[in-house]
Image 1 (cartoon, rainbow, N blue to C red):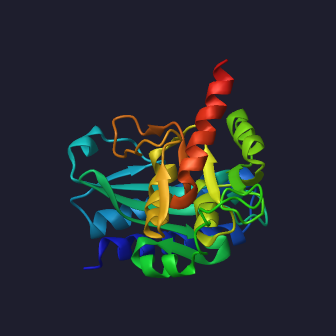
Image 2 (tube, helix red, strand yellow; image 1 turned 90 degrees about the vertical axis):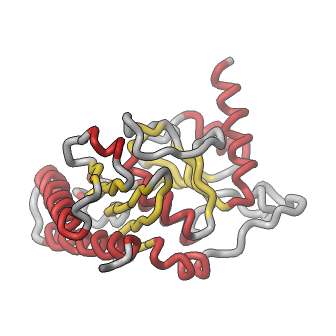
Length: 267
């Protein structure tokens, strides 16, 4: 039997392949989005039922079964993260998320970026860590970047609903905001070192971040709420208000900047 992280990687990749084929066949954007959601959800849930029949599943496209709250193992999946981008020709910032929550922690995860031919997985933790650039230097700053590189910090944010809070954070840190689509694509950009951090304050669901957080942590990154508290999964309400993914070395700087920005908003 395949290990959990290998199964997550395989299922995310295979679901992504089905979505690429569907997209290549063409159609109107609304039809593609609806068809993609259904196709990937049906594939993932049927394969999880076949390979892990005793486990619970929480999927964006499925009915929430409250029995998952008493389960020891829950697969948290987003069959098509970035549905908007999937329906837009040429965009690559959409993803498939497959994660396993086990007894209070994220035990495995995979984020497939099918349009890029890429899968990031906890099964490949050593590869993820080896591929990451060196963490920012924590010495005296030589410029606006908290790491002292002299380059502006790059914060990836929602391309459609970047909140005012993050505009304030970027202004305080003299940082650049980089808009991108799905949460998986944003987390992957941090893992690859294309950007320095992913901040989101507009609220999202567990399936939006479970797999990205599992992968980010496997890559040696820090992941938490914007106030520094823990991200908790398999909760009665799957809603998560905010998230931060970044290198450990700049987490404190970003959390402090968020706190200051929130204080300014409340005045």
